[in-house]
Length: 374
Ligand code: AMP
Image (cartoon, rainbow, N blue to C red; front, side, top):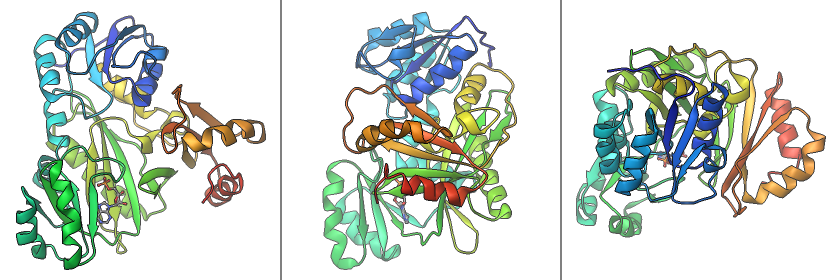
């Protein structure tokens, strides 16, 4: 049953990172109160929340406390405890349910769901053991990528196999979990669609973003993606198909590969606002965070509109000092820092969004700024 949650009521968020923080900021603009469950005291979301519950995500008493203080509960990342979330659905209002987290926590169930939705994925096999991989890998051929079913992110838990001789390199991955092996996709671009849906089945997609990764970490998102209109429409259609199939409530980020002929292959899903959608805070009439709050609070969704082409660049630990030293030079840059205490190398500390009428000139400006060395 879809409820409507009103300003003044409390939204509970599991996870205190930057995604929770940006959700909380959007919700607070509308007058909601925020409770956050997060093991660390000084978290990005904790800094802006009204109520902080400092405990592990699977701590039963903490989950009960969150249920007690919240009128609706959402989460900001998918690696929360599934059993805990499931229990929470029985004692609190969790419109997103727990099923989407169960499916997307595991590449095996995630891939199966994408296929069931009728969307294209790279050819793949599931290997429970290294021996199974050895026996089946020829069915995929080389090059291929072996990925742990659980717990991988930013390229961790993956191994590229260029030829048969490389197969032993994948052995170690099986210490973590079951794996999948998938054909290497000769993509020309990586794009993502943030699709959002409320309990009434209203579905909206943000404009397609083009993602550029450096060392497996998202470096920048360019919007609109520099792809044909037909491909962009296809990308949105695929994302909406998956959202409907999963009966999504909330937000799903769908990462995709674009091939030379403009066709699309779905890579993976994230059941939450996504780094590649941060541009929407300034560049759209509704941010992915505000829309997420609308969706989980049972409000009608707003049809997203892009005000101007935009680039979002991530600020990692090593970029913080050069960026803060350069703020005076770039009045058009919207600077977001997440309030993390320690600026470790490659840790996501913030991002910058630049709306521009000239994407190429702005890409050059970013490069020439010296903040993001090659
Ligand atoms: P993932 O964790 O699955 O998003 O993979 C991280 C990155 O590895 C992707 O953004 C791609 O750049 C690359 N990658 C993953 N899977 C494939 C594939 N099947 N073919 C080619 N590149 C891939």
